[in-house]
Amino acid sequence: MKSTPEDRLRLWSALSNLFLDTEPDDHTFGYIARVIREDGYTSEEAEHVLWQEVYPVLEANLRSVAGVWAGWPDEWLIMHISVSPSPAERRAIMGEPWIVREISSCWDRVRACLEADPAQ
Image (tube, rainbow, N blue to C red; front, top):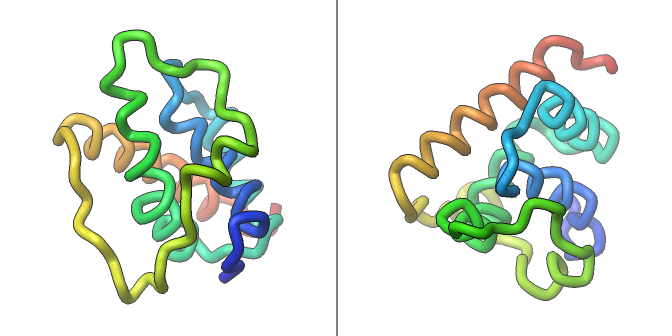
């Protein structure tokens, strides 16, 4: 798995779409799946990045009344998200239960896109 912030940036940026103050749609899920495939991540690696790197930093946006809806600049993502240890070293997922459920549901839709057409 790619291990520097610059290597992870494209995946971080794609996954960050799940935390915007907008409703993700099929296009969003397909885009994230395409980035995962194109960048050579497995589903398990991408899920690790989602929960251990992106989620802890961006989940607060979903609790905000006036959250970010247009996305975060690359520089901001690099400054605030850090590469997590290997998937074997998982931290507990903290946060509002409804947010965990929402992101889990979104991840299920991304995974379905990955499984639907793994060659794409």
